[in-house]
Image 1 (cartoon, rainbow, N blue to C red):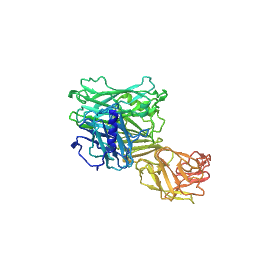
Image 2: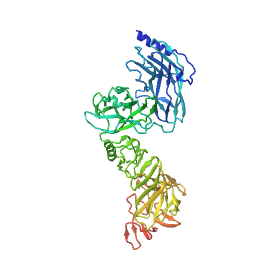
Image 3: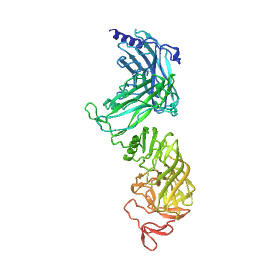
Image 4: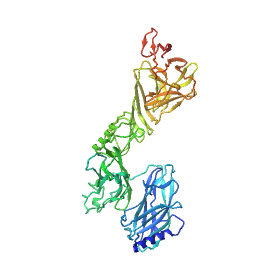
Length: 637
């Protein structure tokens, strides 16, 4: 009865507490106070807020109302409950057995925490709950206040303490987050197959040579997908029992019952501080995963593919109490076939790939992939074996790496928006998700004919071997397309080229110190309603008999009357106006001289007949001579 009366008393005190004006206060001036630690976040990011209780008497319960500014909100779980959770750093779920949060009519989120047995929190200062705060995608950079009002702390005798209301701040920034260097908590990416005994992985704390200090205590959360947790695909999340309790304080990982486990490890003496001699890497714990046999009926399984586990909220503390913010870690888990899956051509990898077996998993997933991969992002790879090779199935695939990773690949590697050597192969897709500069850029196409279209992701210039042209005029009555010569073509802009007769069959398009454009463009022409469209990737262009779509092939200009395929680094022409009858053929004119007659209907079964002046049928038009194409004379320049 006393326990029940205590809980009811606390609830009534919380319900009828007085209201005061929220203000900035110095928490160090108060013996009893609840506040939220200031935090930094980025638009679209979820950040963990730490709620701190500082108390002089023994305290088993508290309450506060939290007011959030527009654009900031608390995340909800799959059951639509706020992700505001009891912290187990100063209590247990058994001791603090009442914890709830709900939104009030005034827009505040009320948090109520109590122990029905009046069991107080341990110690007198520290975290008592956490809040998963979601920052909206469109929140502008700035400082946003979070106000705690209606704050009440209850001691073990149900006496109410009314601390001041406090404003804390979340700073939203577009700048990349900064972390203290030299520290990491990680596991090595591994393969999860159908082994009935599961697969185990170790969690290690690493202190590098660039670390500012040896570390006494490290705290972090290991997060699994919630569904894996709920379906019992995880077991044996344990501490490293081989660490001697004589030198270390290592508690069993705390199961937060949301798929996360909290680890804390403390070295008792300076000799065993992390980072001291021979202690650069310390195994903290391990876990075991199962691929299948989960759920109540044992039918659940983890789908084949590459999945990720997170290590987050990593804080390292030295002997003087200085804390170091450690970058979160994302590690890959390869399940079953584990084919790399591309999103818009891009594949991401995560984790520590210093182990050769992990690197082999990465390369195997690329080779197995059935997707067209145009970029491989290793930005979240924390480390990789020295001079590792990434086996790209697409020779045009870009490999984005952080500055600390050096690959054996000699081309198409982008680090800090810079590529030493970009080499593009004809016939393979290319896509740059982020622009960058290239010291050297090269492309080669084997061509059997002088005329063609081109669209390159860097500036190209006319020279003695090739001349570039842009469309200047279209005369639909005389069925002529007039082109003008240009000295250079900007990156991403499609154009027409004419290769000199005395060059070999290879079209070389090289450049130095160029900016790489991320997207092929539609080039407006001087001819009204006419566009030239370009592409870096293989593309099917939809057309029918009424379409005003034309392209160049085999030194001829074709009207497309059915869907046709355009290879990478090429272009085609479209007329946006509505014509009663699309032209069946156009002459290509340069300096008012006909250079080429464009026969129609190669995209249908209509036969194109080409003859020389002797009346002999030939397979293709001959440059510099009069050719008879479908009964009409033309000169191929």
